[in-house]
Length: 260
Image 1 (cartoon, rainbow, N blue to C red):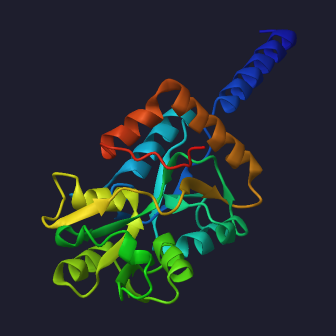
Image 2 (cartoon, helix red, strand yellow):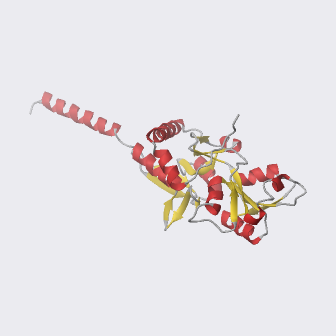
Image 3 (tube, helix red, strand yellow):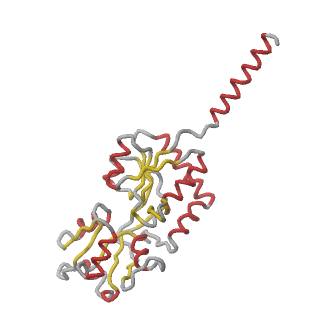
């Protein structure tokens, strides 16, 4: 084998290796998730389930990158992202002005709004009683949620009770220690209208009190990942994958927005 031929073979191998490297899918995506928010993210028979895990797996299929979940309490997700422990947050996180100062949000994949969960016997009182300062309405919220932020800002004059979980708030509502529970549309739907998880005697008022987009979050200094996420999310919409996943977990969607 001549020297020139060996050089040609070596050059061909280098080109081939370069092409293979160019097709590499890249490192694992470390996804921060808080699985205590059905139907967005929760544990089902010991396995992560819900909208966010399904979207993460679809993202993996489209990008060729493996997903590595990091289960982190919701209030620790942003610090973990900023510290470089994870690459992105997929946990049903609402876009707020405060959070936008800390992270970069991808395009929203779902809009939800805060709504009221009440006892069926009180349906004639609400929502009017909620805005009547003389009514003495006792409002329940989940600690750290955007529902809590909304209630504290809007009903500063009222009695707001904070709960560590949605389940604790719902129990308090059923037992009569609060008059209503403020949370987002998927949660209110789950406890009042989903046949598999509804609580008898509770009803949801499906008139949004707020307009909240949910989105994934990345570090401020990671524009390349942000652009990739937006590109893949647009593809999910275009191919109908996003609508398919949302429809699987939320049978009825409430459109949030103002009409002129």
